Length: 531
Image (cartoon, rainbow, N blue to C red; front, top):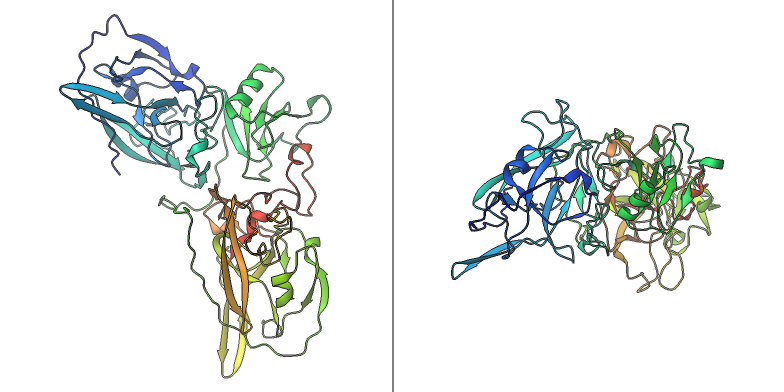
């Protein structure tokens, strides 16, 4: 995984008159960096140490023994000054020599303050993003890299949390803000190591976690300590506003506008991965505990899932059906009935459907199904099945000596009613909008499974601008009280209106800070689960 940047021809320059010193930590994370840094300082000094800097030369290159920073390495946090960003978010950097004249195009460079992370020996990373040799924390993984800049090899490091997911969005166009800062909330990267915040003024803020901020008692603040809503939507602007208010203890980055807090922030409520809580000042960030794969770059650019077809059971006949309104069940609740197949394909989750008990052989009666099997990494139908207690998804039908038995494992409700189709209608229980009535920002696949000898149609859907939500560890998908955790399920971002928000009983969070998220949209992130 060697990253090649650009080889810059030597440009003779006298430094004694041009060099100056700078404390890079005084610059806000995301701020554009417009100087060249002494190469030895880049590799050996901390971001809080004064470093020697110089102006770019007239040809756009850096003077001898100076560099602009290393080129951003796709999907990873790396050095604390990174370069190559164009206004549309694409990363490119070049140097060209023609007729003996060299010109350099580094594009924009930005500060990414990683000082929140502490190396194993108690030290901080150097500006090139490295801890001392063999001093990386056990929950922090790394790669040693190098680029050739100004005819010299420059060493740097890439790092990511042992337990990771994809952060930010897959759309590069939102990486550079309207005020020409780098949005660390939007940059598509693996989860950083413990203590690294995604946004803030310099090292003034630390990422606490997903969702709204809370104090140790779980309160968002009342009375004199009540939170304050805003329409501030740029992370750096939120950080600056909080920094200017001595009573502000932190903020969260919800899409409707940052919410500012006054309580002593101790944790976040993790009700949604769509926004995050940041605490003013230094705090140790709790690291998630899912299993740790070696990051293989996920491939969710218009993925094309395969369509498995479980064997069809041969149920017994004559069964009594009753009616049920599935929307009365909280998202994540285990579903223990069989649904009339035609109702599953044609009715909304708010409409009464016919349901029946499982047969003694574990199968569903004729013309009914338990729900479709969860489809890996996608939201799908609003009742999904196949979950074992360890989160592994499996469903089977076996026939031996003429006797059929079914093992559907656990099924769960995933309410997607928060999403509105293009014609103003809501999805049917099988997760589908009417034909050609999907919103422009919502992508979908038409799928089917064979259940009870009949083809059952359903849909998979995900946001046009997506990332991976939840955690990669299936063991945390089922909670200790037997519910499906939508915060942990590893799926692509759901379509507009679907949110992982709300209490298990379907009520909104205790704080008005989360009222902006509609309840029915609240656990929809789960739907991708159909197989």
